Figure (cartoon, each protein chain N blue to C red):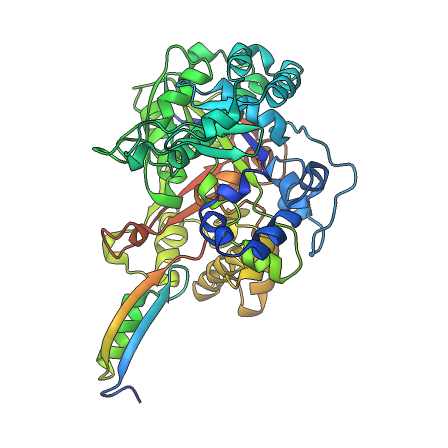
Length: 471
Length: 41
């Protein structure tokens, strides 16, 4: 069985404060009270503030999460839009990116918005890979479009969005703009990956999508395929693709399946992509308003990773180091962590301390804590450290040090699949090549019960290792 | 303590699932009226 590596990873954010009111929670809550709507609007951040927000800089790999300053996080000096792994795109430009990805001419931009977006995208380093004519073609009468049946007034006077078919909930304007935003952010990440790695787009055989959007129509609501749409938009002419669905947990199964396809010789190169989740914009906004904080859920994430045969440099994916949350494993967090972090490591004869970094659910605690959802990564790291203590790999009083040294603060937007260890990939690639780590474990978990089909949750883990030829 | 009491079991994905709470409550003699597990992220 040939070794398989992750040869590149990219990550992007789109700062979208004016789209934030279309997130599921604001969309339900803001119309109920004009005072809340006004407070929400007043708490939106300008681009400069979102850019300098330390967690966002960690997301695009400009700094490692363990190098984040102490909280509360304030503007990071010297923050820039670009990093080796990607960028933070401003909203006026992102509207143009949406138009460039819009195969069905659903988005209409005002002449000002279209001109501004086209001019900005023309200066973008990836401009040659984008269909900028589409941005100009998106120009039209936004008021007329917004008044059409089923249309969405996206941004007053600047952007409107048609539905796919009046009366089909799966093709409503809200659903389709969510899907288009996911396509645009995933494609942007993949384009950055291609650009920075110098990989020939025609050398990618397959794309696996791990996002959580349901692509479909009224007869097959989630039956569609984001991955092939992203492959086309990114110019991967020889690729096809399919989506892996598992709520937040999907990225790790997607990576493992990608690695299996390469290892078995079915494909040479497989990209794993995940786009941002518009429905989760402003999800915890009530907590932020209560705490006098800005609306932190004002960004859409995007991620892409490339899996291929061993190149002698890149981190290896240990297919013999995969953990899975079996049906019989139960639902309590210690049992789940034993299945994910304990079993595969024991199988390989490794101690908990043989893994340098554990990447688990890395939701930004400044987003979750004000709304009472606690510090998700910290809770997971304590469970992993307790497991290490129970196994005798560390003493009980070493638990805080284990958490500090092998865990990290959460830094991801609360768009579950992105937070679920996927966001750590560019950091993992750095740490396992030029950095000081030898092993990184990715752990993803997903809440299957949210779909009301079963009461279970699920999860998967995989071990990444420094390439043996790098020693 | 829970014998013959009515219990609402609310669990959390990263903590203790609703089903586990319900099983404990039932074992302690309670009647479980409602059980749910939620995910807050």
